[in-house]
Amino acid sequence: MTAVESVGEFQFECGESVPDLTLAYETYGEFDGDNAVLVCHALTGSQHVSNAPRSEDHDADAVDGSDAGDDGDTGVQTAGQARAWWDDVVGPGKAIDTTEYYVVCVNVPGSCYGSSGPPSEGPDGEPWGTDFPPVTVGDWTRAQRRLLDRLGVGRLHAVVGGSVGGMNALDWAKRFPDDVRRVAAVATAARLDTQCLSLDAIARRAITTDPNWNGGDYYGADRPNPDDGLAQARRIGHIMYLSKASMGRKFGRRTAGRGAFGDAPADPTDRFFPYREVESYLDYNADSFTGRFDANSYLYLTRAMDEYDLAADYGSDAEALAAFEGELLALSFTGDWHFTVEQSRALADAARDVDVPTAHHVVESDHGHDAFLVEPESVGPPLRDFLADGVDGRAVRDEGDERNDRGGSGGHSGGPDRAPVHASLFPG
Image (tube, rainbow, N blue to C red; front, side):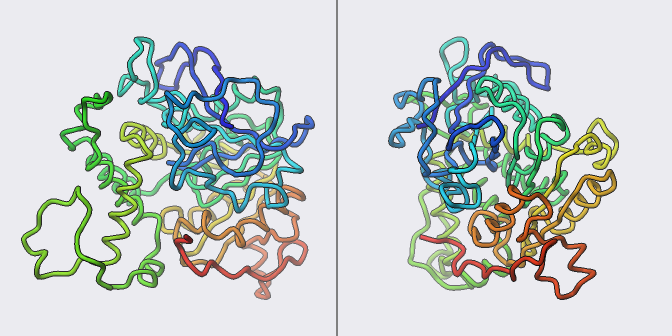
C-alpha cells in the first residue's frame, strides 16, 4: 500500500514555501540499518515501482482513495505506465532484490500520484494549480532526504534512477555525497541537450495553448481538463522515447484501421490518405495518458528536468562530484537519442577526473530511451552486481576496458556476454 508522510514546511529552491509538504511513497523489504536503496522514478512514473510485497513498517496514513484515485489498495491513480513500472527489475530474487535490500521509492513533489503538487489540496482547501511553487530536481532530492530521515534511514546503500530519475540519483552524489555508497545513473545525463529542450518546450506549449488549460485553473467537476494539449505533449514525448530503428521495425508505413482518436481535428484529406499504425499507436498512448496524469504536473516536471544541470554552482561536472566518495555506474543504450551514450561517457569521464570509481556500461540496443524499462535482461545483471560489488561487479562492463580489449564482453571480472534484447518494444 502506498503511504503518505507529511514532512512539514518546505522551502523550494525558488524561495517559495508550502506549509506542509506531503510525500507519497512505498517501501519493500526489511531495513537492517545498512541496506536501503532509493529508487528514483522517471518523468511520469510513480512510487509504485514493484508488485513485490510492501514493507510492514509503514506508520504513515495510507492515501485516501476518495481523494487520490482508485487504483486498488494504493488509493493512488497509478494506471498505465505508472503501475509497477520496474517490476521486472525490483522484487524478490530480482536485480534489486527486496529480500536483500530495503527499497524506497518516493513520488516527487510536483507530481500527481499522492505527493504535494498542482492537483493536491492547498491551504485554502482548493487544488494548488499553478500557485504551487516551481520545483527542481534538487527539491526532489531534499524532500527524499527529509522523508528518509522520518523513516529512520541514514546513509543509503545505493540510489538508482533512470531518465530524469537518473538526474535525481546524480543529484544525491552532489548534494549529499556522504549519504550514499553507490549511485546508478541509468539512461541519463548531466543535463539535457538543446534538441530535447526544444521538444519539451513544444510539448508545454501544446498544453498551455489548449483553451481548457485556463491558466492552470481547470480543476473541478464543471471544468474540462486540457486533454487535447496533454495528449499532444505525450505524443511528442513518445517519439523522444523511441529510436528510428524501433519505430520502423514496429510500425513501418503500415496502414491501421480507419478513424483517429477524438482529439484529432477534422481533416478533409482523410478520405484520400491512410491512417497509419504509428499514428494509431501515438493516439492510443496519448488518450490513455490523459486518464492518469495531470497537465500542470507535466508542465512542472518537464521544467524540472530541463533546468537540471549537474555543474550548476560548481563550474564543472567533475567539481560537482568531487566530494562523492562512493562508486558510480553510468548505464547507457546505443539507440537512445534522448540521453545519449556520448552524454553518459562524458559523465563517466568527469567522475573519473576526480577519482570516483566509475564504470560506463553500454548496452547495444535499438529500442531507444525506453530500453531501460523494456530490457530488464540487459539492465538487471549490471545493476544487481553493481549493488553487490560496485564497479568490480561481475556483470558490470566498463566501456574504457572494452576499448582496450576488443574481446569486449567481459566486465571487470570477466562478465557474461551481452544479453539478447527484447523481442518487442511494447510487451502486452
